[in-house]
Amino acid sequence: MSSDPVSRSPAHPLIDRAQVGARLRVIRKNQKLTLKQLSERSGVALSTLSKMELAQVSVSYEKLAAAARALGVDIAQLFNPAKVSVGAVQPTVVSTAIDTAAGYSTGNYEYHPMAGDFPGRNMTPMYARICAREMSQFEDYIRHPGQEFAVVLSGRVRIQFETGESVSVGCRETVYFNSAIGHIYLAEGEAGSDAEVMVVMTEV
Image (cartoon, rainbow, N blue to C red; front, side):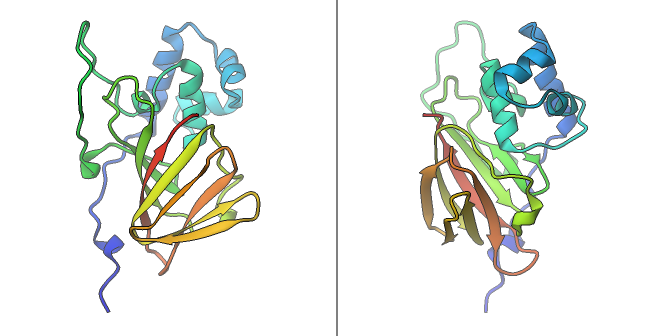
C-alpha cells in the first residue's frame, strides 16, 4: 500500500502573527479608528482585536476576515500588503505558487491566501492545511458571509455543519456550501496525517 501523499507535502511558509497584528494596527491607525470602533464595525470583541494586534493570540479566518471587511481591505493585505503603483493598470492575470504563499497558523488550520496582489478581487482563494481532527478543538463553528467552494488536494476531510449535517470528501472531490452556516473542517484518515484543501470564498 502506498504511503499517504500528505506526509510527503513540502513545508509551507508561515508568517509571524506579530506581522499580521502589526499590519492590522497600521491599517486601523491610518483610518483613525479606535479598537472600540473597529470592534463595533466588525463584531469582533475589543479584547480579541487588542490581542490580535499585540500578537497574543492566533485567531480564525472568520475573525481576521471580519476585521479586514470592517476596514474595507482585502484579507490578503494582512498577510502580504499589495504593492500597487499610482496609475498602474489592473493586471489581466496573476500567478501564485502554493508552496511559497505566506500563511497563518491557528493551530487547527493553516491559511495561505492566494492571488492577494490582484486588486479588487471578487473571490478569496486560499490554500489550507487541515490539522484539527476533533470538534472539541474548536470553541465554536466558523461562520462568514457568502458561499464557499473547496476541493481536497490530499488526504480526506469531513466538514461538520451546525445543522447537524456533515460531508466527507476525499482527494479530487469537491463541496459547495453557504458559509454563513456554521462549519468546521476536520482531517480524517490516519492519525497525524493532515489534509490539504483549496478553498474559494465569496462574500455574496
